[in-house]
Image (cartoon, rainbow, N blue to C red):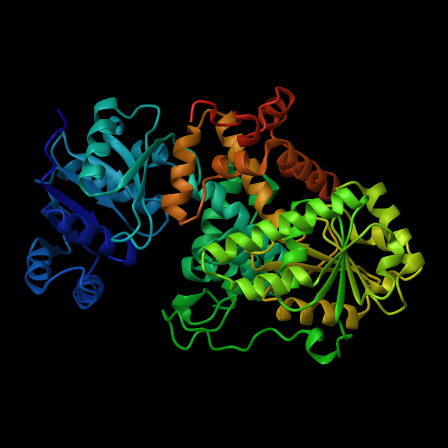
Length: 591
């Protein structure tokens, strides 16, 4: 039987502490809320009143319910008032010395069976617990912000935490309507350990002027379905908080990818902490506001006239090629689909027709528009038939020699001034350009699968790409309803370079037996709002494809942290490639 927890102390009434107090009071728990002084109490009470008023106006709480909720919270500036509570949650700022001091004081005030909980997001629970005479009753309970809304709670046990304490805290979290995952005491726990390496990598990209803040954020929103881009998320979290978490992680892991990007420290020193100060990577109309006021980062694309594009060629017959053909045909472009044989060309056109027919059945396209789109597609076998296209998009296999042969053939037949584009997701675009006598006309246009659905296109310029070629691709993307983001020609571009190291870190976490795959997936979906957990996503992408991309990133950047996790390599060697083989990190054979 789990112990009955009916009264809880909450120490610290900042955004997180006030949110935790609200969660507790909503669930019928009596709360003793402690702040350092009367001003702190006033601010904390204000947080709670404002949050619950929003809940009433949003229809999530009625006026009587709000009054009952607020009536369950008693405010004080004295820790001594916690003498009779069943459990204490500490939610003060991330400072080990301050937290340790609070726990040492609590040890003298509370009953011997009182459970001590820290809401720290990065500090060691073990180091906090040793300042008490009851380290076996000390546990981490990491809520996510905003606590009343987000379901995930990471329950952090130390090597000396009593098993029944963990059981009781898990049951308590479930009673609060939360989704608990139990993990060991390691910097960053699950969610932050995976999230902040990714965020730090995005800051480095921005710092190196590899991509604009808007393009970095749009790439991850449109390419991965993330609820926020990395820089906007950092502004929400607070750059000072992010720095402290990264610094703590680095001192434990010594992984250079966790070392805070220098730009973070510079921005913190300048007082640019994100939304809470009104300015971070973006500028907001006032502190704590979500409304961005500064103009979009200027781009040279806006000042260069694009070339005219009326006819488009697509080389290839795979899923990506047929998807791109459909995208352009539906938007009124005449499209020539070049295949290696008439049979392959006919089969590809048939796949486009099948996709168009599905859109008609689902009411997304009229029969007339579908027929018109199909009528704009001309199958071809010879490269000569691409002679007068204005834009040709290569979408053949990810094999550099094959792509270079295609570009050499295009160079011989396509008219001067036509744009030559590759859809590669991992190979150097400049290597394709070098196979032609016109490298200034060559560009990367990385569509995402399925091309008719996904809005993102990464527009990749080499050191030789002409500005009007970028402007042309940008204009064409707009014309076919895609969102272009711009970056340079290096491995992974934006999305894969940010996504796959994060996935690799998740594999390393599993490999170290720190947490189970399902718990890691739950933490990232529930705690960070991601559409899929890392292992679900790896199984969908294919472990062989994921390993190849990770190897490409490692070979390009030579970062030790990018080295593929041995477990990923072993699973690929064993033929467990994910959903396509029935087994990957998870078993799909019985589903």
